[in-house]
Image (cartoon, rainbow, N blue to C red; front, side, top):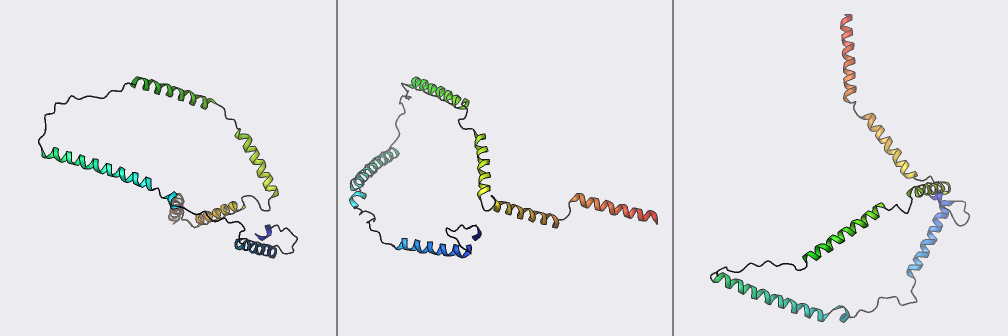
Amino acid sequence: MHRAYQPTTAANNRLLKKRWDQRQYDLHRNKVADIKPQIDNKAPRTYMHMHLKLKKLQVEEERLAVVERDNRILLEKMSYIMRTKGKVDNWNQYHQKSLNKSSRQRELLRVTHENQAILKRISSKEPHYNHDIWEEEWDQNLLYMQNISNYPIRWLQNKKRQENLRKKEKLNKTAPANNEEISERASSQASHIDENNNEQ
């Protein structure tokens, strides 16, 4: 691909010119990597009291202690129930009712209608951008790219496609004949045999 290389200065051999330019660029990058900065750009110093929140750890330990205490009390109650006899089940079953159920249903219905109206407006809205114009502009840009490029566009893809076609043609040539060809050959051979028998 050195033939497509465009040097900044005139050169008789593009390959050597590309190598020289690449070597100069590598030397430049090495110098840039080894240079010492004039500004202190190191990471700032870290302070442990800003990262380790002791108060947060204390609150978490207290919360875990409360949970552990509640679990222990619940376990004691369950063990007491298992050890003693059951009592008469005469509790009045009370089903909790919502005081604002109707208002929440009306609000949900209103929001649903608004969403449907918004969806209808969005669906009926014509697009602001015309994709046909975009396709025409893209075709024009492809033509410009074809005119200014050193190699044809999609040259590698076309080459791979041609290689795949050649491989398929070779496979088709080496593949055995299909059933129709075999049956035609068999019928032709049988007809030749019948003709020979009739002649004898």
